[in-house]
Length: 223
Image (cartoon, rainbow, N blue to C red; front, side, top):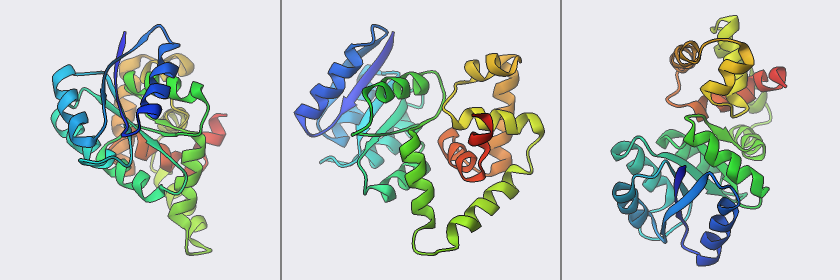
């Protein structure tokens, strides 16, 4: 059973998230919070597998809460709920260690898929969030996107052929076990590849690596 905490300052949103997650018999919401500080306290108390956090909340926003959770309860994965126009928050959350990014207006299935992926140790970047991140990073300079894509390809070129395959799978939100089954290798081998990929790309977490995968076009190769 995947144990989840839901944090949002709007009771109706919390109820909606809880209702969606309740459609999956393998997921249980064990706590709810209306603010960032409360979310951190409840995560420490209940030790859920995943914390689903809204970006903007009173008493410490979702970005601050995500960073604190990752520092103090590292076993709890963090999924950030965003709306369009909050791209700066997404970038901050990437740096804070959040592993999942979902758009509130997205399909309910994405919420379940994101929670399951993060609980399984994977990163989950909603395709629309990934596209917004890449576009935002290039905003303000007509040549910036092309430059970032070139830079991402240069970084990806430091990977071995197998690591490139693993990165492409990682960028689609697959867990280590799913990648292992797709590539026909042991899960421990995939874990070692992911560790090497993070080091070679110079990123701290799988979600940040997923952004590089999207920028370099490696995800498209896997599809």
